[in-house]
Length: 117
View: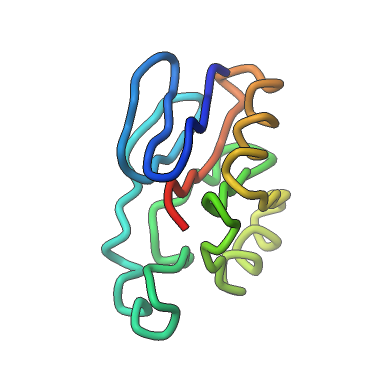
C-alpha cells in the first residue's frame, strides 16, 4: 500500500494528500469520524481514539498511527474490543505505521492514521 507521512498535519495515500486523520479498511481510505470520541476530549487535551468510533475491525490486524510524536491516546476500551474480536493491535507513531503499511498489500490493510500530535 502506498502510504506516506510527509509531516505534521498531512498524509498521502496512493498519491492523494489528506489534511486530516484517515482510516483505511481493506486498503480503502476514508476520513476518521471523531464525533463519538469527542466527549472525552477534555480529559486528554485532544480527541482520543475510543471504541465508540467506526473502527476498521475487518482484518486480523489493526495498525494505529499515533501521530508525529506518538501522542494520540488509545483508550483501554479499544484494546479490549480488539482482544474480544481477535484483532492484533499495532500502535506506532504515524511515520513508522506508514512504513509498516507499505509492506502490506492494500486489500489487507486496516489502519487509523492520526496526522498531528
